[in-house]
Image (cartoon, rainbow, N blue to C red; front, top):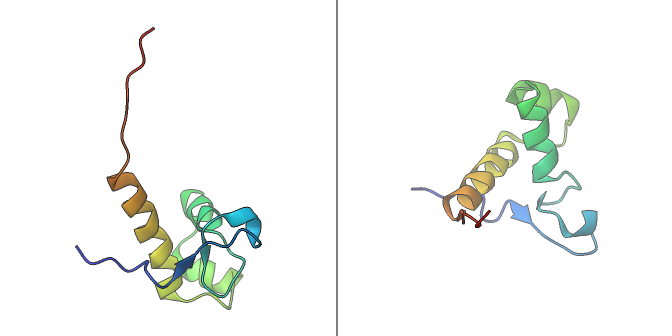
Length: 78
Protein backbone atom coordinates (compact mmCIF):
# COMPACT_ATOMS: atom_id res chain seq x y z
CA UNK A 1 0.00 0.00 0.00
CA UNK A 2 1.38 3.40 -0.96
CA UNK A 3 1.93 5.77 1.95
CA UNK A 4 1.45 9.38 0.91
CA UNK A 5 1.45 11.18 4.24
CA UNK A 6 5.20 10.88 4.77
CA UNK A 7 6.78 14.24 4.12
CA UNK A 8 3.39 15.99 4.24
CA UNK A 9 2.42 15.60 7.88
CA UNK A 10 4.65 17.02 10.60
CA UNK A 11 4.57 17.32 14.37
CA UNK A 12 6.24 20.06 16.37
CA UNK A 13 5.57 20.62 20.06
CA UNK A 14 5.79 24.38 19.45
CA UNK A 15 3.09 24.37 16.74
CA UNK A 16 -0.55 23.59 17.53
CA UNK A 17 0.46 21.85 20.78
CA UNK A 18 2.25 19.10 18.84
CA UNK A 19 -0.80 17.95 16.89
CA UNK A 20 -0.05 16.54 13.42
CA UNK A 21 -0.24 19.35 10.84
CA UNK A 22 0.10 19.67 7.10
CA UNK A 23 3.73 20.62 6.48
CA UNK A 24 4.28 24.38 6.23
CA UNK A 25 0.88 25.21 7.73
CA UNK A 26 -0.84 25.39 11.08
CA UNK A 27 -3.70 23.30 9.72
CA UNK A 28 -4.12 20.12 11.73
CA UNK A 29 -5.06 16.71 10.44
CA UNK A 30 -7.85 16.85 13.00
CA UNK A 31 -9.33 19.99 11.40
CA UNK A 32 -9.29 18.51 7.90
CA UNK A 33 -10.95 15.28 9.09
CA UNK A 34 -13.54 17.26 11.07
CA UNK A 35 -14.42 19.42 8.06
CA UNK A 36 -14.69 16.35 5.85
CA UNK A 37 -16.91 14.56 8.40
CA UNK A 38 -19.18 17.61 8.31
CA UNK A 39 -19.53 17.21 4.55
CA UNK A 40 -16.76 19.40 3.13
CA UNK A 41 -15.19 17.99 -0.01
CA UNK A 42 -11.71 18.55 -1.33
CA UNK A 43 -12.84 21.43 -3.56
CA UNK A 44 -14.53 23.18 -0.62
CA UNK A 45 -11.41 22.79 1.53
CA UNK A 46 -9.24 24.21 -1.25
CA UNK A 47 -11.57 27.21 -1.51
CA UNK A 48 -11.71 27.73 2.26
CA UNK A 49 -7.94 27.32 2.72
CA UNK A 50 -6.30 28.54 -0.51
CA UNK A 51 -2.77 27.61 0.64
CA UNK A 52 -3.77 23.91 0.85
CA UNK A 53 -3.14 21.41 -1.92
CA UNK A 54 -4.86 18.21 -2.95
CA UNK A 55 -1.80 16.30 -1.80
CA UNK A 56 -1.93 17.85 1.68
CA UNK A 57 -5.60 16.99 2.10
CA UNK A 58 -5.16 13.41 0.91
CA UNK A 59 -2.11 13.09 3.17
CA UNK A 60 -4.37 13.84 6.14
CA UNK A 61 -6.70 11.01 5.17
CA UNK A 62 -3.76 8.68 4.60
CA UNK A 63 -2.27 9.62 7.98
CA UNK A 64 -5.57 8.78 9.70
CA UNK A 65 -5.72 5.48 7.80
CA UNK A 66 -2.22 4.60 8.98
CA UNK A 67 -3.18 5.34 12.59
CA UNK A 68 -6.28 3.15 12.32
CA UNK A 69 -4.34 0.23 10.83
CA UNK A 70 -2.25 0.08 13.99
CA UNK A 71 -5.16 0.58 16.40
CA UNK A 72 -5.57 -2.13 19.00
CA UNK A 73 -8.74 -2.69 20.96
CA UNK A 74 -8.63 -4.24 24.41
CA UNK A 75 -11.74 -5.35 26.25
CA UNK A 76 -11.71 -4.45 29.90
CA UNK A 77 -13.43 -6.61 32.48
CA UNK A 78 -16.64 -5.08 33.77
